[in-house]
Amino acid sequence: MNKDEIYNKLVDICGKNDVSIDDADLIATGDWIAKGLEAIYKDISFKAGFLVTPKNKEEIIKILNYANDNKIPIIPRAANTSYGGQVLPVYPNTIMMDFGKNMNKILEINLDEEDCVVEPGVEFWYLQHELAKKGYFFPAEPGSAFACMIGGMVGNNASGATSFRFGTTRDYTKGLEVVLANGKVIRTGNHRKGTEKSVSGYDLTSLFVGSEGTLGIFTEITLKIQPYPKHEVSIVVSFGDVDKCFEAIERIRDLGVNLALLEYADEMTLDGMNKNFKFQLKQGKIKKKMKVPKKAGTLLIKIIGTNEKNVKQDLESLQNLLNSELFAENPPKTLLLDTPIDQEILWNARHNAGPGLARSMAPPTLPRMFIPAILDIAVPPKKVPEFLKKAKEISTSYGFLPVTFGHVMDGNVHLISAQNMTDENMPKIKGFQEKILDLVFSLGGTITAEHGIGLWKQGFLEKEFGKETIEAMRMIKRAFDPNNILNPGKMALSEEIPKIINFEELGEKR
Ligand SMILES: Cc1cc2nc3c(=O)[nH]c(=O)nc-3n(C[C@H](O)[C@H](O)[C@H](O)COP(=O)(O)OP(=O)(O)OC[C@H]3O[C@@H](n4cnc5c(N)ncnc54)[C@H](O)[C@@H]3O)c2cc1C
Image 1: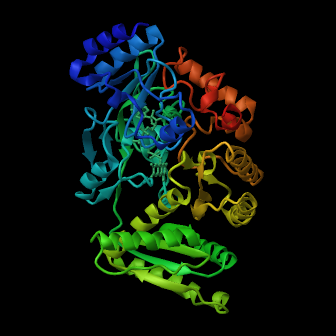
Image 2 (image 1 turned 90 degrees about the vertical axis):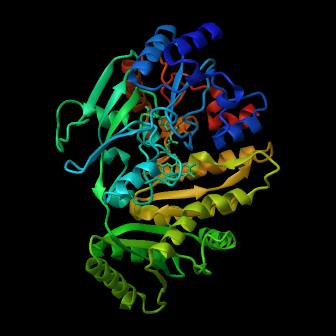
Image 3 (image 1 turned 120 degrees about the horizontal axis):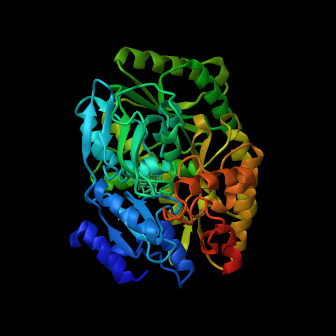
């Protein structure tokens, strides 16, 4: 298909102001994976053919009809913060369909039904802000909450540190309006209906959530919302010993206190937090010095509740446990934070600690990136200590020392290692990654608990599920998108995974 023809058609549909072919709009500079790959493969540029910013469903239908007839790839894009290369174009003439500019409205907030209806380009924080005015919130909060949009959260089934308590985006998606590859519009689940419960037909909502733009384009999203628990207290508990810390987690689980967060942090993460406190102090963002003890086996905990009395009682139960016989030999040190501002500073520092430290580990003069395939693995929660112990042995044997922190209640561990992607380093990186993933699979774990598959992890999907399951996924893809126009080359849904985007192949290709 001739580029000018496609451009003219898109302008016909959306108008000149909503179609761009400027390099600045087409090169995927926002994605750190793109930067890393472009640094390695000098001849690559993840460049879309066209950027379109549709204003409504009608324009999207027309674009899809045209693209489907002419087999032109389309990538739906929200805030472009994906960690797996989900929104990187890998085929020529790709139409990047962006929702941030024009489809960014909250359509309804219904307190009676405790739901809201939004367009895909609504920013997570904007929605939280509007809900907070009414005493409500949307609880599935990822680490990229500062930037991500609801369409992308649904596309990736985003979640975060609180998901053991509140669940993932899928748990809150009541229904969707979706434009399919053939331009037909469907409604799934309880979209705009207020109904709470239904088992009517296939659960297409669940299928679309986490489909990474490969099955259809969401034009409206109905989300469940919840009243915000007004009271909270945070506590840092340093055990000085990893085994004791994990024993405590099991006991805390049994206590039944109302937890919103329970995070494990290694010494490097704590170091990163202290650096972050200093940075914030220097910038004038915080008024007094803050410091967490840099000790092995540390937990960061937040207790929440709708009234102060319950939060106090829960905190007392936790403190009684920590002061009990069980920990008498080496009593844990605690740091209590009970003002909203101190808690905000603490959790900000925690969110920024790992990535900040990891980035500073490798000299920035060389092509450098996180090892994506081990970034957000999960194992059964009770096997986290075994995973951490063995992963440390593997890391030491390779001379890589990743920053490790995790949402231990649901077994999701972040192993962040930034490495220089140099010729000498590649075989080492590949071997390290394989050993870590073998460990994950041997413990019954998964390659991704949060960030999704995208480009990078597709080479490992078969190892996790086996051939037959991957083929079943491909059957679904073929049924919804027979011409493979929706985000093609991702999620291991194409028979032939483009070599360039398979991390497994990087070593050989260089
Ligand atoms: C610092 C940092 C921390 C992160 N922490 C987390 C975390 O804790 N948990 C987590 O889950 N993720 C995390 N991520 C990954 C990512 O930010 C989230 O998954 C986020 O929800 C993606 O949202 P986005 O708006 O950037 O979507 P995008 O990256 O733009 O898109 C995400 C996917 O959704 C699809 N999509 C977008 N809009 C539509 C639509 N209208 N219809 C159909 N498909 C669509 C896209 O094609 C793509 O496959 C993190 C990323 C960063 C940079």
